[in-house]
Image 1 (cartoon, helix red, strand yellow):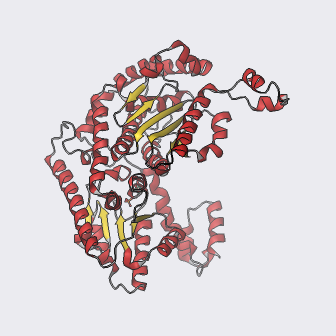
Image 2 (cartoon, rainbow, N blue to C red; image 1 turned 60 degrees about the vertical axis):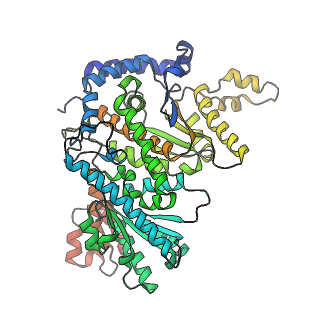
Image 3 (cartoon, rainbow, N blue to C red; image 1 turned 90 degrees about the vertical axis):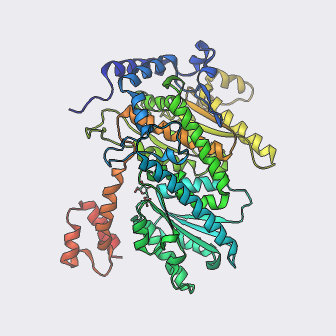
Length: 547
Ligand code: F6P
């Protein structure tokens, strides 16, 4: 029997509320709750969030406030802030927030070592940034391309920061190589010239197979171009400096960060060196300060006025009581095209868990599938399902009021579309409206019925005044804290990622079996490695391995 993570009385109240929410929908809430928009909207300074077009209500909030009391939510938030080892399976603190503000709003951190590490890591990052900038300014050939080699948390955030904050006409390109699939690498190398290219290998562990293989192949490319000891020119960013050194990167070119910075929480660290080299360290500092301001909101506001708590409350209510399986995020700004990939890792790697903190199986739903894309492109692909599909998919619209280009008409159209979608999702369109629109044109009844939109589909709107470094920092910190809150509601450890291990281990077993000169049935050795695989995998192996 696993430990119940939600008391029966909270579960019953939420089940009852869900029955009434399913029956009445969201539109009806606006007519009974006249100041709904004001009550359920939040101004975080750097952005504004409107939750009123969701199932949020005073009743829902009251139940979650009781739930928060029962599970000691505030004490758990304190533990995060205080640097307790809340990543219990790996026995680690979760302190990436220290990197955005070392004083961290009065953190009750007793461990001086941790503060010293945070300071040293920041100083080394800034120092290395300046050294590289200096070296680059002295080079005979200006750097035009940076190849950032890293995967998952060692690249997704950096790529987002680079794309979102670089000047539109920036002369340096950063290429992000993560995948082991060399089609990507070959393509990138074909765009770069050896003399103008800087390589930065980024890996928290410096053991990740894809990253090491890609670095090896880039080193070979340098050798083929006449550079004798390419690794001497590469940089590494890692929490395992000795591993980077053993790999061959000179100590002076290694920038380290502390192990208490999780991979998917490492955008605030020197992992973002390549992006910082392009956008400038000043903008990067602003990015950090935007996040620190959001931290303050999260740590100081009580749950009922805490935007992160309330957004997570809805996420949790939707997956557990309104049968929601996925949440969609649509950024109406091309510069945020990597946001969904970033948030997908943040939320699903953090909260896609089936064990409670004590190791018991979970007794509730955990992370929904997180997906999405960029508006208005998505309107012409997946929005059909959003409006008329059979699943309830809460969606998030991220809009930026002021663009950084002069094509005003484009931007008006972009914003109009984003706003119109949220209105359409809420309002829908009934048969009477369709009859009146098509009163004169003889549209068939069949076609009219196909045009019915049920409405009552939840959406959240997040509005940034401009896509500044501060606003981006605040936005990402908001999602981090929302992810934390969800993990507390679900009673899971949001900071490990054991679910990625098994596949990695099996890949090392599978790889030798793919050797075409040793067909599977031919050697005792391969037969031994093949043992334990299921018949389907064995059959596929024989097809791939015999090519
Ligand atoms: O395999 C998952 C993972 O460990 C992620 O959590 C991490 O961000 C990524 O791989 C890269 O790991 P590293 O930074 O150690 O190369």
